[in-house]
Amino acid sequence: MTVDEIKRELDALGVGYPKDALKAELEQLLAEAAEDAATGPETSEPDPEPDPAEPGPEIGPRRRIVATDAGALNIRCEPGGAVLKVVPDGTELTAIGDPEDGWQRVVIEAWAKAEFLKG
Image 1 (cartoon, rainbow, N blue to C red):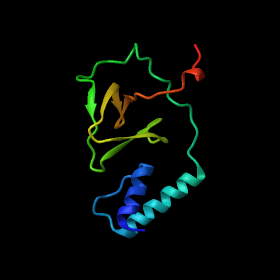
Image 2: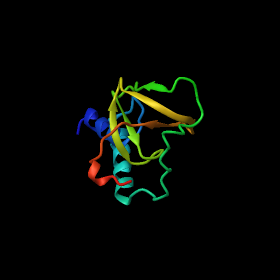
Image 3: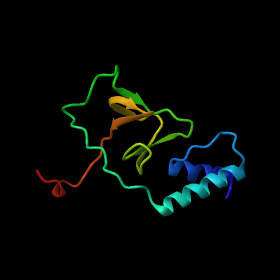
């Protein structure tokens, strides 16, 4: 596996790495991430879904533009949790509430089959 392939795998898993990391370091990070994935994440209660009518306190401009060194951003179900969606740089997102420990809750526009939504 090439360094670029390893970096793509790490990016897909949401694992950070130093830009100047050597191949052996990247392989070690990938092995650790694979081991963590095999043992499964700890289960905890997910954060409740935000009520769009109550978006939280204003924190200035609520619109944010994705800008990463990798070209895309992993959107997760919770801080450090499973990746739900990957959005490319330039995508506009809406921030909700204040950042917490380096994580920002955002609104993701998506579609679901209406027949499976009740209420």
